[in-house]
Image (cartoon, rainbow, N blue to C red; front, side):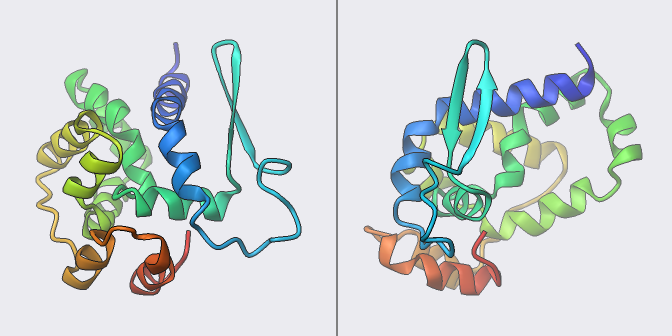
Length: 167
């Protein structure tokens, strides 16, 4: 299997594992396109013999941040495999910004929230990648405090303002 196919497969499996939480929390994200239901015009991923229906791009992305995980971090499993198989240098050749992107996104990563809203498994994988990359997450304090509020739903826009984007 090609490197790209492996990355895609890992990503789809991650989405499938957390699809219920993704759908639940996506209903709290304000849609800028209220005229079209995401269930009618969302995104679909195929995984094995199933089609997984997920929200439109902005809602999809904003939902992952609300779950405590920047969407970039959904590639954690593939990045771990790349480090373990000594393929990471070649990947960084094609994507030299990858570590910088993870450094930037780490300020929006809140492992305790992700563990509560998703599970410890994904948190451990992300933390492993951060260790490989020698990145110490330092969440923005105001962002962390808002993200930890329960319920978080009324505060999604405040979180987006801190990030400077919804999704």
